[in-house]
Length: 518
Image (tube, rainbow, N blue to C red; front, side, top):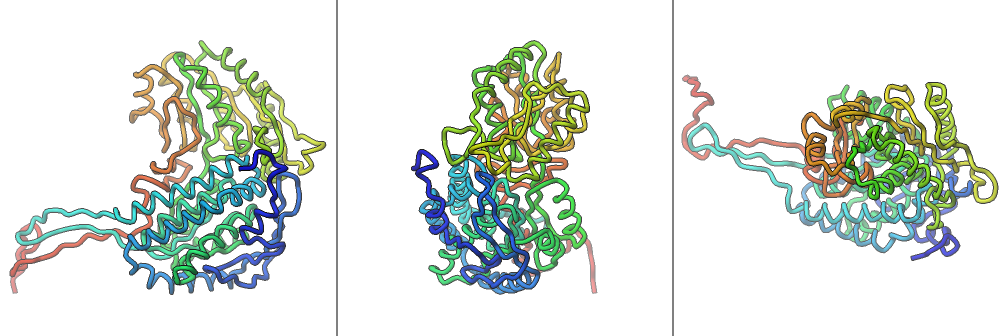
């Protein structure tokens, strides 16, 4: 594994993944359409360089993808689930071969650290392994009937086309979370990735296309359409797409949910987070500080699970504040492909502007900035996307604190008295994705995890808000959207549920003893 950025040759990674200087923006399997939509330049936030260009897909390519997907579904759904699992297993094996190259591309095109890029590809591998096992466990159940000589059971069937809309911050893993499960469930997938990370999508399509081709499967099992919001809108409104899985901002999710709901389709929404860690008086600060710093500045604060609020008991507030300021002073900001750096760039200059606006708004509302922000310039910072992580003392009711800013800004909030007061502060935001408490007090822990505790989809004890595991269902409540991906029984959203009653007798009794004689 390369130790430094000098040892990483991005061109080699691009060649290995089939990325050209100019690329088409839509494919089914290994067949790439000649796309003539708007030109998308993929500029690296690492150094501002043009990585490659993509010609965006149009609605014509989208229509072609849907037709091929419909055709593929007819045969794919009839492949036994364990054999579908075998295809996913092969996909996971090929991801292992391409791990370093794809991890490098994720880092270079999105801006997260190389280790995080590798970690994201590992998530893809892990969900493949999970899905392979799942392919033999798509269980229904049997029930006793109230009618004599009758039997009841329920089962799950393939749903059809799954539309996937993903965000730039996890440009490969979110797609894999959805596709690996959808494929073993017997579905086919059409992916509309973020136009900010189009090359990652092309690389992923090239990888699965190889598996599809080697197994002589229909191309329409996996399709990609790269382009603007118009393609996402079209997918959301399309009756032929029974499920749309959308990851991104709450604003985007509300639009998708409204469009899908209007046609009574199914949506899986993974939206914004405004995640908090509660620090109780009994917290082990040796564990706490690294968890907070990684949660707040890892991926430059661009995770949906990033730590945005720190709710600290007044008895330890000053101690924690000083420890954080000291820890932040040791952070190295720079090229994320250089593993000696802790913080990379924001995705683009639009994100930088939102970061600067958030700081100014926080100041205007009365926040005290403990560590000033700013945009870095000079050698190594030519992209204009590198910013300083910020720590601010604030109040939970500030409008800017209620809002999710995709940037390394951490708000310190103070509480006093019982842990219930801290929980009330934590829950008093529109979002409900991830949460954590740092405590060695069992009563506080159990209160936090109880029905009067955290209202988030993820509630952790003595670990941070980021770092969800494949085995658990990932997602949140309220404006986070309510969707669940990945582990546990999240697979059920990708299937249609059916209840069956079988009469194995010679009479036809009606339910509830009703008589209907002719």
